[in-house]
Image (cartoon, rainbow, N blue to C red; front, side, top):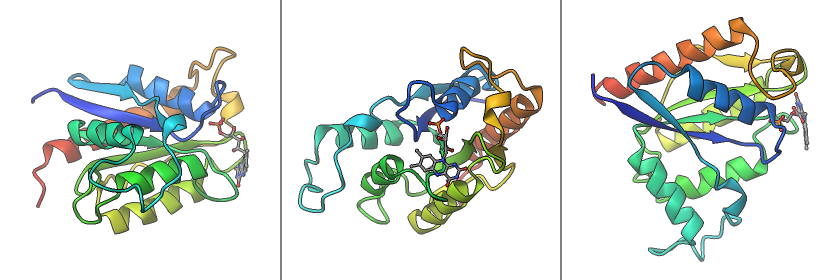
Amino acid sequence: MTDITVLGISGSLRAGSFNTALLRAARQLAPAGMTVELYEGLRDIPPYDGDTDTETPPEPVADLRRRISQADGVLFVTPEYNYSVPGVLKNAIDWASRPAGHSSLTHKPVAIMGASPGNFGAVRAQLALRQSFVWINARMVVQPEVMVFKAGERFDEHGTLTDTTTAALVRKLLDALATTIHTPAP
Ligand code: FNR
């Protein structure tokens, strides 16, 4: 099989983020032939503005769209804020989703996972994200669902994933994403 590149986007800007730590773990756990690149431009994406969503959008937006287009798939790692997707991540997805029906995310293979220190592993945020990808018509991996609950118990003080059950689940998700990427779009 040909080598594939996955763009990993964490929805947290925090240096000590569990979700970014989970994304770093995914980079290490990627199957042979898959490279996971970390997107680090989220902080630079301006608030969505239809008036600047023109043929020449703000450069950080153009860069995001370019990077999504160039990747074979996208791995979103979302925290949960108030039972939903953090505004910074939703904002970036809103930009990336335009123009509707022809965006960088349309028909793009995408996978989702999330972490929280609480008992639910960002499940409600992940479901909200799934809804967005239905409208966007991305090729979304449905299973496995990776809900990393009690995240504080699964990483060491350096943000390294130590929990083998979580590592196995992340591997399964990446395998499923690879399968979606390698399956021709209908
Ligand atoms: C939270 N947190 C949170 N947790 C949760 O399980 N459900 C929720 O609805 C919320 N809501 C929420 C709102 C806001 C504004 C903040 C700042 C936090 C807690 C959240 O899961 C926790 O801060 C995580 O550690 C955030 O992810 P990162 O930054 O560690 O990746």
